[in-house]
Image (cartoon, rainbow, N blue to C red; front, side):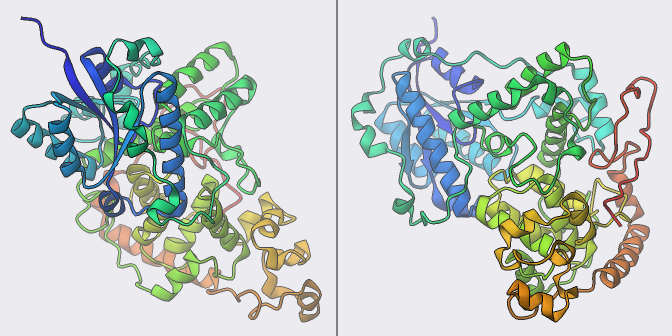
Length: 533
């Protein structure tokens, strides 16, 4: 007997899009009716992902956009508030559901949710279908190819990808015909009961709105805008982007990938087409495609490493006796360090929910191994709350990297909180934009306003120590001291440090040469980065 078509709830979690959505496509192909549902389980979201105001705005905007796009295709998005297990239990019964579909995710909290839904399916008699849609590859295949464990170096990871071949092609975009094959959702007429809540419904302030707008539509528009200039894409090399550009000079797509408003596979294959037409494009790992592979690397390691977002119990992370200093952490978080470049970056993070990747390096190094010797976990939590592109795997992976706790081993390279900013933006325009209190300082003092004579401070209308803080630390003394601490840690924990040690150069630092090919060079030439001490 042929299988009867299903009555399906498609459960959106990430993957808030209609292009390249393999799970939703499979749901439509196997069902007589599909209920597109987003369960707004605030308790779950707040415990799993410490979401700040800007992230809530971005999520609600993305849900509104998904609702509009589904409506155009004759369907709708049903947003249901409540605890996800109770909501599912009620609606499976109410709608006679025989199948629940959802994207497979790698985060422990999403895996736990899927296990709960599987158990519920066994109890209530519905099937559960989950497919990977958030990464280039099915991460489980990469782990299998590596004997069931994650490859801990980028070189090993790339070797496995070379055996696996290219990622699967994106699936077809969903059309009105795909939805017309199914019966209309009876709840269409009740759409108002299931509407996307407004920020005030969730007691979220409307005041702090980021210039970034959430949703698939905005993400696709940005993607097209960047792909129009094929020469720019083909010559993109990450370290050349300018950290102090007032408008993002990298692709500005990361929040859309993080929430799954944009498909990473679609972007990968669009780039492949551009590279194929261009004779002069940068090689991985600093090309745009290379950035997608780094994302994939962190996802792979995170998916199979216990306690990936913590130091304790994390087998790949150096166990460091970081200082616990709530007052210093608060000054860093609230842009009160007394170093204008650091404070401008943290102010931008508060206001916009996005900062340039090199700006992230600077403030992370300052908090951890560079100056304050405070745990990367504390910085990770602040980024998790505020960054629109905050992501379980990438956020933790980058913080371990930037604190030299794992992955990154050139720990003698420490960002200077004065010189690096000065060299990229000598006039201090970035500081003037985000720290208006320093606007009238002459350029020669704006990175070190405490060195300005008293008369110059009076003329600038800002007395250091009163209107803007004095530096909270002596960078030279602190960084020298911390370097010795880090050296000692790495000698004592040599075995752990070697786990993630790679003989490939750091992709953030190296200048790739056109003539260097992957075949004839195992090791890139070391490039001196003069921006660092």
